[in-house]
Length: 267
Image 1 (cartoon, rainbow, N blue to C red):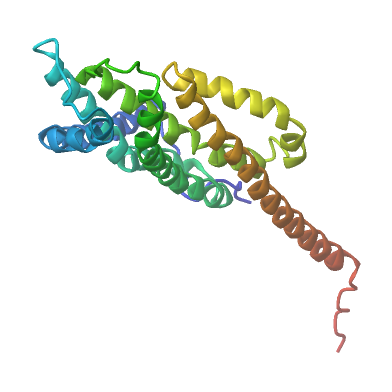
Image 2 (cartoon, rainbow, N blue to C red):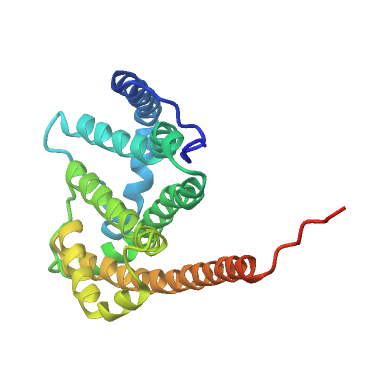
C-alpha cells in the first residue's frame, strides 16, 4: 500500500534541493534587479509624489547637504520600490520551491495567506501615505513661529520609507494571527484574554517601527489595536467553520460505523 504523502513529492538528493533553491533565489534576485532599475529611472517623479505632503505644509523645497545625498536617496527609494513591487514574484519563487512538498490540504490552507500578505502590505502602505499630510501638519505646529523648516532629502526619504514600511508591516497582523488560529497554534479565546497586553505591545511596536515622535507612534498604534480586534473576529469565523467541518466528519464516520452492512446474497 503506498504511503500517503504530498502529491508532487519526488525523492531528490539534498544536492538537487540546494540546486533548485539556488535557481529560485537567482530568479528572485533577477526580478528584484529588473524592478530596481526601472524604479531608479522613475525615482525622481516618485520622490516628488512623496515630497508633496511635506512641501504643502512647509511651502519650501527640500535641501541637500552632500553631493551623494541625492543619489543615495534615489537608490534607497528604488530599492524599497523593488521590494514592494517585486514581492509577489519573490514570494512566488519561494512558494514554488516549498509547494511540491506540501499536502493538498496544506496548500489550500497556506495559499490564501500567501496571496493576502502583499495585498495587506499594499493597503497598509497606502493608508500610511494618506496619513502623512495630517502627520506633517501636526508636527509642524510644534515648530516655533519664525523658524524655517528645511527638510533634508535623505532624512525625509528615510522617514517616509520607515513610516510606509511600518504601516504595511502592521497590516500583516491579521494574516499572522489568523494563520496561527488556522493551524491551531492559538485560539481566539486566548487572543481576547491577552487584549490588554496586545494594546501595550502595539504602542511598543509603534515606538520601535516609527520615528521618535508621539504623533507617528499613535498613528500606528491605533490601527494595530484595531487590526488585532479584526484578527479575533476573522479567527472566530475560522474556528466556527473548522468546528462545523469536524462535526460533519465525525457524524459521517459515526454513521458509517453504526449502519449495518448489506448481507451477501445467496443463490
